[in-house]
Length: 227
Image (cartoon, rainbow, N blue to C red; front, side, top):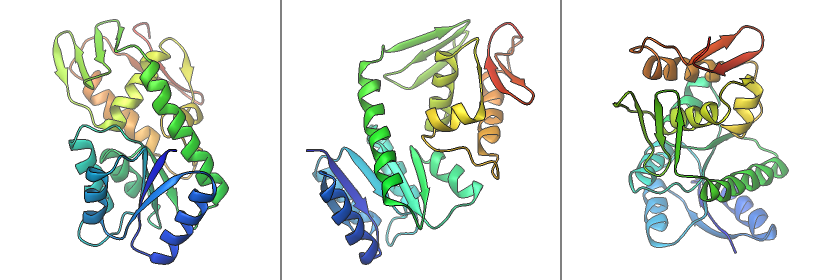
C-alpha cells in the first residue's frame, strides 16, 4: 500500500484529504505544521508528499528544500491558496513536482497523484546517462556538464533539460512541457514555462558558441545543435 504524507495546518482540509485518500486505497500520515511534517518524513517511508505552503514552524517551501537536501526524489505536490506565477516558480525552485490551487477538485487531485507515482516508476526504468552534442547529463547524480564545464540547475530546470534532451530535434509545445514536466495543464494566463526556458538558456547556452535551445514562434521550442 502506497503511503502519502499530508502536511496541512487546517484540520478540516487535512481530514478531508485523509478520508478521500484512504478511501482511494492509500495509507496516510498527517502533520499539522512543517516541522512535524519533516519529522514524519524522516521517520516513516512516504511515497508522495502533499504540502500546503503557509505552515507553522516550517513553511512548505523550506520543507520541500529539506526533503530534497536529504537526497530524496519522492514526488511533492504543493496544495495551496497561493496561485500566482511567482508562487509557482518558488514552489518548483524549492523542488516541488506539481502544484494545485485551493479549492481543488478531488478527482483531479487523485489523477495528479497517479501521474506522479507512475513517473517515479518510469524514472527507475530509465538509463542513468543522457548525451546530446557536447552536453552530458548524469541522471542519478542530477549532474550536468557541457564541454567539461559543470552547470548547476534547480530541480525543475534539470527536469526541463532532461525532457528537452530526450526529445531533441523535435518541436515541443508549451502544452507538452506543462503536461510532461509539470504534470499540469498549461495556463495561458501565466508565463512560468517561458521564464524557465529563459533560465535554462542562460545556463546552457549563454557561455557557448553553439545554441541548443531555439524558439519556434507560435509553436514552441526545439533542442537542437542545428538552428
